[in-house]
Image (cartoon, rainbow, N blue to C red; front, side):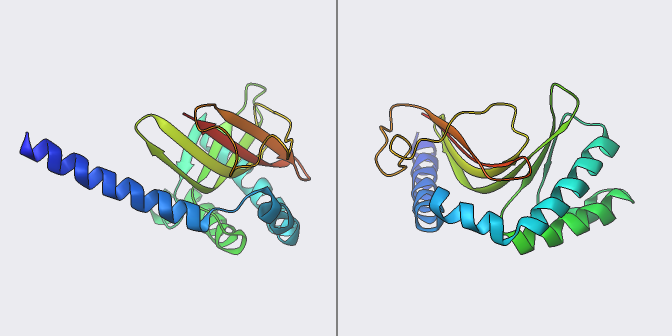
Length: 169
């Protein structure tokens, strides 16, 4: 019992740390929108390269963590090294490569997020998302929404890219 309590205490402190880090570093739509346009050329390169890799891998779901390119066989390792460079230029975390229902590629470039006790929140750049939902600034103010209600939106940017927010209590 004491071991369980120690473990849960550690998890609680870890989550508090993660939440405070996410809150301190989290960018919202007002920050992510101009950032996209400043890096539009890199996003276009990422789209072309990552969609080609997804098709080459012939996978429905691949989570690529930056810095892990050498773990892939050639020529994928070389392509993921290029993707690493683009992610560093753009800024972001893991890149999720998905195959859509239509056979096309979808991409999710995570900006920030966390999961705890069944709750999850994530802010991402999304290319060709499978689900769209209007972004309404008055309703989607991240500092004012009810934490008991789910929130999902996609704000269109350009070239098939969106800012995507997903909160599931």
